[in-house]
Length: 364
Image 1: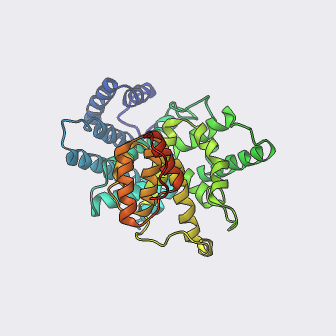
Image 2: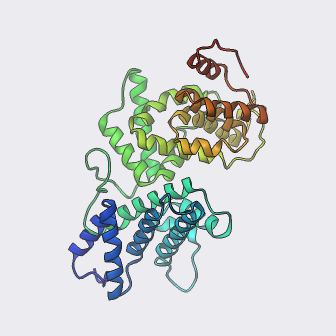
């Protein structure tokens, strides 16, 4: 505890943690306490980073200009990454930030976001909010919980789970999905157990990016075999995603859809030889996953991608609109389809026309 010189006893850390991760009023009190502690000396990097992120969240109010809010979030994330990684710099030579992040278990997405916020356009408000939330979760797990002797995070779903930190989230997620695959092969009517759901819930909370990346890269969401169709894979694993709850399903859906936005456009349409290229196969499967998860997206995410004329966005917006019965967004998907030259599938058109009391008119 010698490093935490501004704290006189462990109870001060516990009290400050409960305030910063408590209600709105608690957080205000926690931020004020941090200012008082700074009179004693420098706050530990993790404590100061937590204050920066919480303060940015409190600045996200309607009366503030949206661009100013984005700037505050961006600065908080930049300082968060800088302070956490600078504390890990040792020796005479400067270690690259990506290497430092990997060493301490900080997802590289934070380093990339820091770079974008510093040298490129200010990131979208949706991305900044999501990454700020993830940053607070990461700080709790990697600093606050460890300082107070906890094993699992306080805020998780289900009963406490003891996590083996020597195994990555990607590896654990892969094993859990394989367990589910074996269960489904033995019993097609099986439903995910509470234990399996809780484990997955913890993984997605602790490291969304690493968990998803593991599922994509390890013959789970995107199988190695060129003969397996997306429909089969999605029907196998979608019930497992659904079991972890609406909030996390939205996070997962948003993460998959925003990953699609990094693809170049225009791109070739899926064809019979789509599996001849590994990258094309991955892109094809991820597009199908994005469409399958589209009904569970946040409306904010759908509205954001609806302004980007890409073929898969037309399909994603159409899937969301049909599920929600949203005429305005369905009209937007029709416009996107016309601009990008993609066909909106017949069944979506049928679903939509039935909700409007008309007979299906076929493919647009």
